[in-house]
Length: 288
Image (cartoon, rainbow, N blue to C red; front, side, top):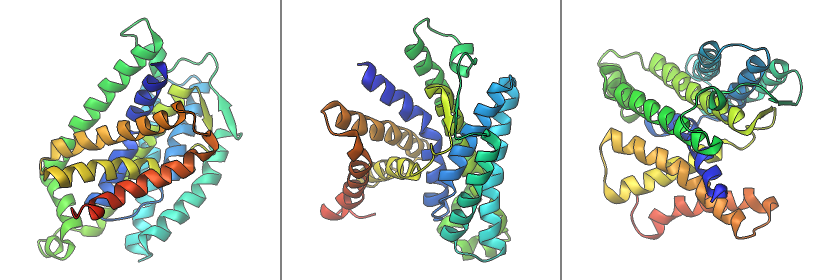
């Protein structure tokens, strides 16, 4: 039971990444590889500031700002220098490796006897159950904030930029600014996942973000498959399914390990699972 509870906790931690990928790829149609670097950036900033006894009300804004700056830099390179979005993300991700290593000061930083959000905020005396309540509360608040944002005039302009850039530009919207802002928001959410995961697992590692984009992508694909099957148009339901997709993705990996599959094959299984989810609508004739 604890095995699947851990998967549930990790799924909630990865909700930020799923929301970030949803914004960058599904709203703006931009494949943003900055995710790998900004996730680690959120983690190392959290680890470094926690070990220097910084208060939580300073750490969280610092993490969001760091992720937003990384995303904005990718957006600026893509829009102002006219460089392919995929390449722009790779360039920033590569640069962030050195930044993350400099911030962390070492390749791995344990958070021994360091107070975290899960130890400071106490709803229940049992650690795992308390972490679940804390994460569920944070994820619900995050979902409400993003849902409200996407339904404002600014959010509608963001969605219109991805759907029909020439049309929204003709209406006087600065689409370059929209893309930069959107990528900043997406990577701030990704950094938030790093902030949560480091405190949940108790250490920050320089390689923690390698391949993490597949987690967010898999979560969004699961949600998109359900959305297309049920023909859901509600923004709130879309976000709820993206959150559920992050949890389902972790449950699938947990089930794979639980039945005795070699952990060395986990990345392969992850790739195959995402491939099946991507190909399933086409195999059944239900394309988006």
